[in-house]
Image 1 (cartoon, rainbow, N blue to C red):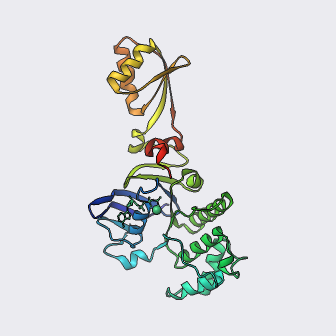
Image 2 (cartoon, rainbow, N blue to C red):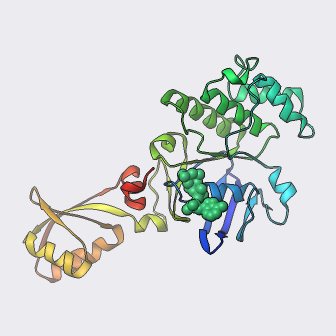
Length: 310
Ligand SMILES: Nc1ncnc2c1ncn2[C@@H]1O[C@H](COP(=O)(O)OP(=O)(O)OP(=O)(O)O)[C@@H](O)[C@H]1O
Ligand SMILES: [Mg+2]
């Protein structure tokens, strides 16, 4: 069912001597809400600017419905709607006048389509008010309506929750989900806060220093290659615990602690069998092994480092 809507192929950006985006490879499907998560300066906006053709690609490509933004710009960009910087709206005009104004710049936008996008973002009641009187959330929705006018297959929103209060975020969340489900649009939302996008995304890709460090389904914990690299929490009942902790340090370079009768440490899941084997070979008895997967939030902090969230 789900069709590939956008594909990043070894996407790179170098500005001056600095490599800002270091080879991104991932796909986003139609009807999917994809969270593009990373701390300030990770490269989200730079990536998005390349995705929508606002910035030259140094290497690699972005394909939208199989059309290359590099070699087939006109057709590719027709499939994308985006809010990259704050949408430019005229405060002295009503929401409807703003939409009409933008619609005039795109060939073939009907009056019906304008009404349709207004309904999609739930702005029917406010559409005849001046934009200057809109709340930030309403302005954001009008921006989304504008980005949807030409029926794009992919909608890209750079930090749409910035500055919104919890109610505003909840509203955006509802419209985003509706768009993905009812219109089968692929939606890409960037954010530096997991908590703000976790609930509206199907999958989250985490970017740090221009590299994708993980892709995670929000509902199911998948066993992807990247997943294998992620740390899980391990608790072991072993005797004697002191030798176990020493072995973990000397053989595996793992820092373990002893708490409530259990040796606790974190490591990638793949290492557990060899740890147990080493214990047994060294005369340590293993009574119990318990593992718990880190919650998405723990993983995010593990991956990007707690202090780097802006
Ligand atoms: N025009 C430019 N020239 C030089 N460096 C740039 C330029 N634009 C961006 N950068 C650098 O590229 C890196 C990524 O910036 P980018 O704006 O893409 O990050 P971001 O993830 O969107 O961050 P934020 O959460 O703050 O919006 C940063 O280190 C930034 O300083
Ligand atoms: Mg940014």
